[in-house]
Length: 131
Image (cartoon, rainbow, N blue to C red):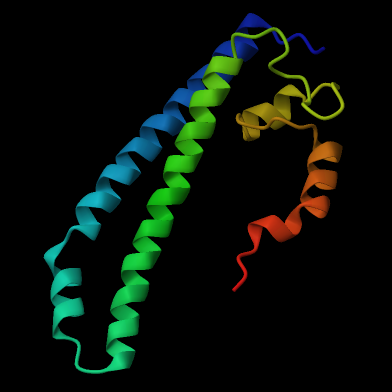
């Protein structure tokens, strides 16, 4: 188990809270933009299949961006709750120290760098959509 100082925990908490606020604003802006009448107009005025697919793609991209941001917000909420636990900076796979520098760069990290690399190699196919 790694022991982070009070100052380190405060920095991590501040980074998590700041990122959460940024994402909250980004989601709000995306929702306002996606509700923009020009997308609805574009989808309604299309004259061929190509234009229709472009309109659908633009709306799908907006939805995917919002989904990604909401998922990151959930990860931040989980990390803020875990921050209070004494094992916050412990790797969920090996139990070793994640390291303050890694947590500062990626405050929602749950694995040390070697375990994260192994995880990505083992489960890389899960992040790739398939038909």
